[in-house]
Image (tube, rainbow, N blue to C red):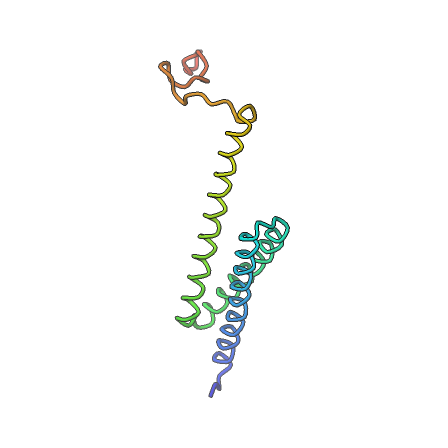
Length: 135
């Protein structure tokens, strides 16, 4: 039985973290479904809710760490949630890159002008001056 105020506070912090982590997991699932459905409005709502849930979870995990640490099971769940966020971010970045390539193919005049980064004379946008200050 928990008798000291410190033990009760640690239990409360762990319980708060458990609830916050469950909210993050639920929002990750909602965002995943919105991305699969390719629904921009649902994706925006879910990503905003996930951001809020992550903010609360980080706050609660900091509080739990200060009050005696985090149980290993919650630590694993938090790591898995972080990995899921990273995987979804990577998937969105890949989709955006793919979309950019498709736009360049379909609308070549809308694509930025491509030129070599370096030519025979070096950087093509470099001024003709040497860059040395003269007195």
